[in-house]
Amino acid sequence: MRNRWLAAGGLTVAAFAAAACGTSPYGSSGAGSTSSAASPSAAMPSSSASVALKTAKTSAGTVLTSAGGYVLYYFTEDKPGSGVSTCTSSCAATWPPLTGTVQAPPGVTMPGPLGMITRADGTKQVTINGYPIYLYSGDQSPGQANGNGAGGKWHVVPITGSTSASTSPTSGSTGSSSGGGSGGGGY
Image (cartoon, rainbow, N blue to C red; front, side, top):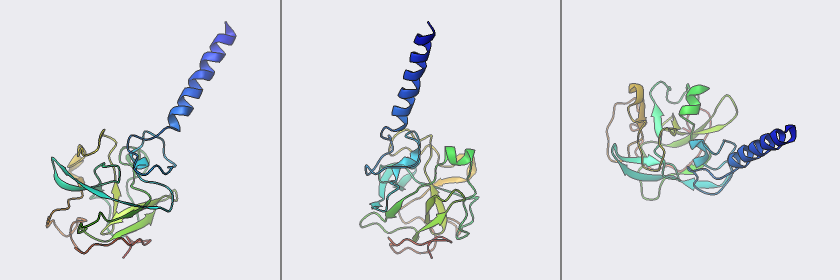
């Protein structure tokens, strides 16, 4: 009897390990990620290969998405250009940072320059116009914008000629940029 329980426990552990190493439903390029398979941050590769972002028409309008088609968000509690994300711990579990090396979608005018910051855990996070960029764990399939307006502080990154207040990533530079950077948002 005891051996049956040990065998069942071993199979359960093996099943969880296999699931953790599987492909992500958010996947985009086939490159690996240091995040678990259930994390939207797996939408971006952890390698140095650059992946083009995309756009999608959603209930919130035309927005910027990950290479896997998942809607991207910014958090108004983040101070643009500070080089710091205020979404950590349980917040980052719900709103995983967009990581990896990205390029602007072909033919799209970005709402600001692309850049990178280094999070406290050493992860490189994409920024747009100095704002750290996130995915939302509540978006279960590409093109969903379930996080838009959450708490009045989470917003999609709109692409079409939106002229938002100067504190959003949609203001500032309207030229395309595929450059990286570091520190305060890649300026």
